[in-house]
Amino acid sequence: MQNKISFKDINKLAIPAIFAGISESLISLTDIAIVGNVKENSVEALGAIGLVGSFLSAIIWIVAQTKTSISATVSQHLGANRIFAVKTLVPQAILFNFILSLLLFIFTTLFVNEIFIAYNAEGLLLTYAKEYYLIRAWGFPLTLITFVLYGVFRGLQNTLWAMKCSLTGAIINVVLTYYFVFGIEGVIPAMHIKGAAYASVIAQSIMLAMALYYFFKYTPFSLKVRKTINPSLKPLIIMSFNFIIRTATLNLAIYLANAYATGYGKNYIAAQSILMNLWLFFSFFIDGYASAGNAISGKLVGENNYQTMWKMSKDISKYAIIISLLLIGICIVFYRPIGLLFNQDPEVIYVFTSIFWLVLFMQPINSLAYIFDGIFKGMGDAKVLRNNLLFATFCGFIPTLLILDYFNFKLYSVWIAFGVWMCCRSFPLMYFFKKNYVDQ
Image (cartoon, rainbow, N blue to C red; front, side, top):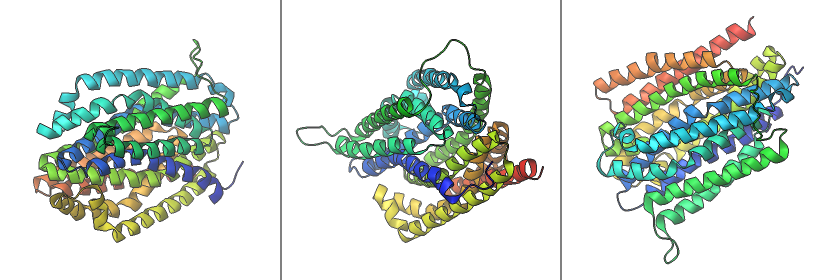
């Protein structure tokens, strides 16, 4: 039994996870950067991509919670030297996600108009959002199956394979988005916002193909679905259901943020699109260490080794805070140029620069929230995470947003509310972990 997890052990998982996470967020950032610089209707196009990206993230995060559950289950069985017991579970989990993704595709495409009207979209903004979404929606099955495979890899203490898949997909997406949006004279017609959507779906297809290659070649699992239900499937679905409630609550906060921003005007939702995607980009940086904590804590639970887990949590938190401070420093140096990278409209940039400092200020607090999220996920303690996020959203985020909006703080309302939200997510988890697992 290990008494300490080394810096090398942590970074062996964290660094590939950081690159994998960055690669996934780069797909959305690439769409925003390229489409946001198209001369024709760039503000509406940028806003549309922001709304669709937010909705896609919301839905995928909600239904992809089997990724977290399968990672926790596999890592705990690995730590207990019982990996054979989940061999039939993995293909059943993949089939479950595939069926779920098809249902989502059908439902959301049928009600696409109503979905984006609910975000306060109208006119050209609504038209662009629907055009972009109806293509991106084809990526649902591709993304959800890929995420389950990533969860299996992480449970096996390997984040390198997911990194290779995601980096490849991100690079392909950057190249294809540029040429599909602007076109090549006589070869590829300029497809504007639709081109960005087609590029994303192609990139997701390649990521899935690569993930399947690593799955078949290097893991002890297969895709053969047996009639006998694995005993771990029911606990996995229950765990996933709690994670789904948690993630649905998380995305309620993001939905309200974007709906309020859209209501403030097109310049506000355009700026919000940039801010939200940068926030997610920073989150993926920090979340690499959370992924390491997730994988290692699951294995340590299998070993019943909570003291080592506490030491690891302090080390990982320290590394994540250092990463967040480095990101803040870089962004302060390039404060205004970062906004100009995504859009040239003076009014959009004015809103962006007036709010961006808030996004930066909350990064160290975000680090603590993500780290302890990852540790509790690795332990499979979905109820604590569910209740914590319900508290953070309904007692922190929503009241703050409503009060500040009443006093006409506009986009400040949204990001101050996010700051309160992250405080409510981080500090209670740290207290609960130490009290209930370490001090016992």
